[in-house]
Length: 84
Image 1 (tube, rainbow, N blue to C red):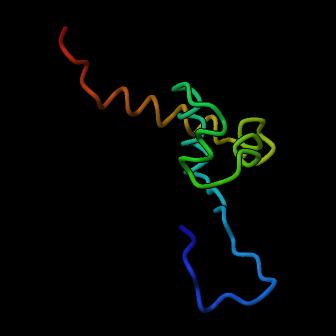
Image 2 (image 1 turned 120 degrees about the vertical axis):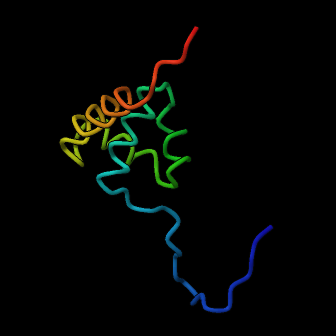
């Protein structure tokens, strides 16, 4: 269902996608490593797949891959290994 809005001006294009920050960029890498496709990652973060592709090709947010690796390593060190 399309919601009506009273404060939209004719010809104005509402922003539909958010800009990703450095934390989001690291999350993109973690989601990619966990097996999510680019378009799925974009949908989860509310952005365009091209922005996700830019992060993964390191055109934007250079260093986010290293930050994501550090985040993943820290997570593995703090989470106990479940017993079998």
